[in-house]
Amino acid sequence: MRHPRGAASLVSGPVSARQGRRRRWLLAAIVVAITAVGTTAVVVRLTVFRDRSRAVSLDQARARFRDAVGPTSTTTRRSAASSAQIAQPAPTSPPTTVSRPSLVAPGVYRYRTTGEESVDVLGGATHHYPDETTITVTPDGCGVVLRWDALKERRDEWRLCNDQGGIELQPRGLQYHEFFGSADAEDVACDRTVVFVPSVPSSGPTPVHQECTLAADPWLPTWEVLGVTDHTVGQDRIDVRHVRMVVDDQDDYWEHTVVDWYVAEDGLPVEVSAVKESRSPSPVGAVVYREQYRLDLVSRVPLT
Figure 1: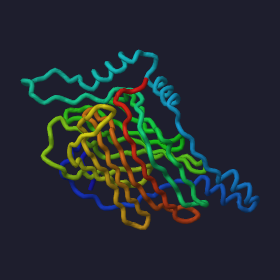
Figure 2 (figure 1 turned 45 degrees about the vertical axis):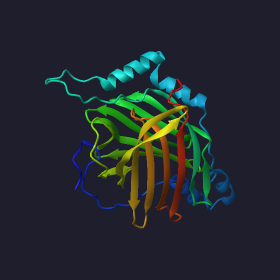
Figure 3 (figure 1 turned 60 degrees about the vertical axis):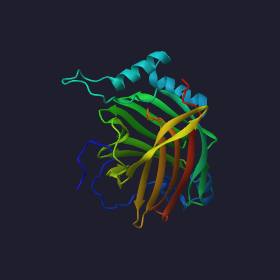
Figure 4 (figure 1 turned 135 degrees about the vertical axis):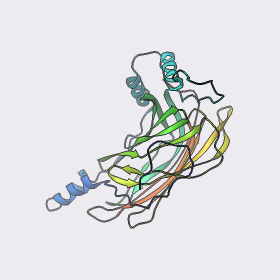
């Protein structure tokens, strides 16, 4: 049974049955390799199985941001984004004391980074993440889209909106991977939003279960707000909310993922740490993917 659509403020919900992920990473490269095996195996190894990883420079991230927002001034961009999120229809009843938190300002945010991703197929390949990566925030629909560029071959995208319940993670996102020259852009589509920063404090941590698809395959994350703590960013000590996402799939093609987010009151990630491991089918046997990383915000002032 599917959950009703709408916002989940991290309150109770029914537990979904586990369903396996069926990633399609590397299939294009592997199929080409199998087709070409009868010709020249050496050429196949050099052309089809070649893997690379390339960092996204700060200048490239800033150029993409400017292309996305257009030629308007920084002040105009931030003012318009904030107004779009905070604006509310005229009240039909006396005002209350509930205020809606403002969203993170558009711009390019820098993060100290450690981590890597790897696959064990075709002799194996590992992508080491650079010492600094970026999250680019641009206006999008009801709020903003955040794009983490780990590498040109690895990125994530997610969306935040400011609604009556607070700052919500939207149901649409993207996970992008590229190994051996085979790109895999997997769309995330979920049945409900999840409140990261509530307008009204919640009574306590209670899991929320999403039913999603990652590409065309079932994907079932569980979210939980574990509490409010504080982090140091530069010279500032700020309050952050600890939000954890877990995927625990136990079938033959399993996935074990834990991602810990520490987000500021405007939704900006201040720290993110992740450990991921999954097993997926392919024409040459099962593929095990592993990823681990940690991001730490350098400054709350974005680059534009």
